[in-house]
Length: 191
Image (cartoon, rainbow, N blue to C red; front, top):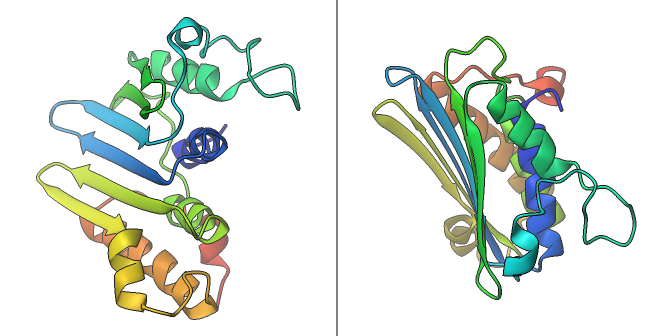
């Protein structure tokens, strides 16, 4: 995985498979403290205690469609390459928290990537779920919450084309105002 947005996509897919109804994604960039924190928390089924220590093993998965589960192990590797670590906390029936830390200025720290497209894909592809994205950079922050958006939209579906464009623009603009370095990927070529 080339950037953090792809790790986020993969971990949130696990949350979706665990029947989460709400996922919160938090990124904290602290250049002065030389650290970056990525947290993904859901209210899904959680991980049984006896399986929790195995979740970062690439040769362990609970999925029946494949025999390996690389998502968490790749995120752990990305964090460790940057003098960070990965922690997974979970309670069966309550949900899971994945927390990865990175040394901010480490040459091997992966870029954020196309966060706007990743979040938009997750939101539009799972319209019945709620997503909250919090991005903190130094002393400033940006928050995007689908609960608030759905309230404002009323009867307009969240996957309406104009709403989809609004979501991507809102996230892109919010992160740009924070001074985040974004890889706009798919957005760059759009009219």
